[in-house]
Image 1 (cartoon, each protein chain N blue to C red):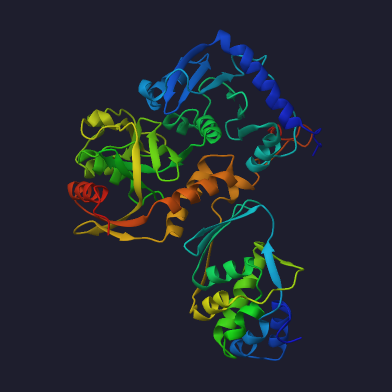
Image 2 (image 1 turned 45 degrees about the vertical axis):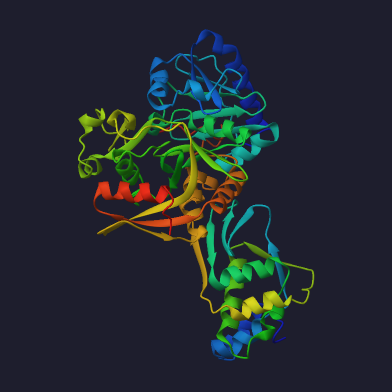
Length: 168
Length: 349
């Protein structure tokens, strides 16, 4: 269903139909709403920009520009569809925003939730329309080793961690 | 891999803490007075006590007798083979180990390369560090012995250890943040040589209240490589450092330079992120708070295990409380110190 489908579904459709990005971007403003995946996702707001840490995998993200506007609006319960109501058809920000949401979902920061989106308050819509981008998400993984990577490469299968296997 | 019985990590921690409580009486003991905290160290190893004497601030005026006391025993299996041994457990990465201990109000860390354990009980304010043998600890221990224990104890007291530098004048100052190579340590040393005070070059204790961010000294040492010292007109002998450390840096107590002094506390006015710019004159420009968070949070999360969620929230609160600035560094150390002096005095753009 165009206009309300998931990003992936619309992208597949667009790919099959050889539609340009600006053509299909407007259709992917889905009605889906999102929430952070779990308590492991910790987000901090700095004057409307965000630093988000995923304690599950040690990755952290810096969200600025349009990505930060989207993050705030999505976590306030709004959908892309309701936010993008004020954008003209074919506006490239539709595709930018949809791709940003897809990236946030693909990185496990956001998951869809079942509740329908309330109508977006005028302030969110106005901010979204005002945003010229860029939709910036910087990802960092230098903490991954600390939080999740296995520091023991070889473990004695009988004795378990922290015992290393005997050397030959 | 063999499955571990439930609670294995907690039981091992309990055994070690029980052992430490009983073993302390037969060990050498020394008390160090950190800001708002007395640290009572018990160990068989004079060398470990020397590390503590060399690195830790011992400020009697900061820690009267009625302040909380952190008791830590540092023992090794070579001299105490009767100590409880780790059972076989499923692999635990640092966060999972911390999570396993958290419900019993404990923190812990296992150093897989050195086979050392650190367990801390928040309710008892007591901990134990268990080494394979005497002196068998990572080389960076010398820069801040018992760092994790001080970090865990401060977590219970509403303060935090922060991986940042500092400079000040007249009781006010700035925190200096940045990745390695950004010029943080060189900037702190340039400031000290220019007569500015500091509460630390690498780690400071921080307290955030509604209207005040205060930083306190916890370690004496400052680090700089030979090239950096030469750039500032110093040689290792002049700073009292004999051998470079594992990073090729010389560690020294900056008060030996007889320039800037170690302040008992600094009320912080800003976060400054130095950038090597080779500019004619140093220049300050406002920076997004998000970038100050990125300059501070990752290294703190990495170097100070446990309490990651709280640390993230605390660091965010600190960043929101202070304006952030880039400092594009000039090339003259004296000019850098003067620029910071004026900035701290209130000349903020």
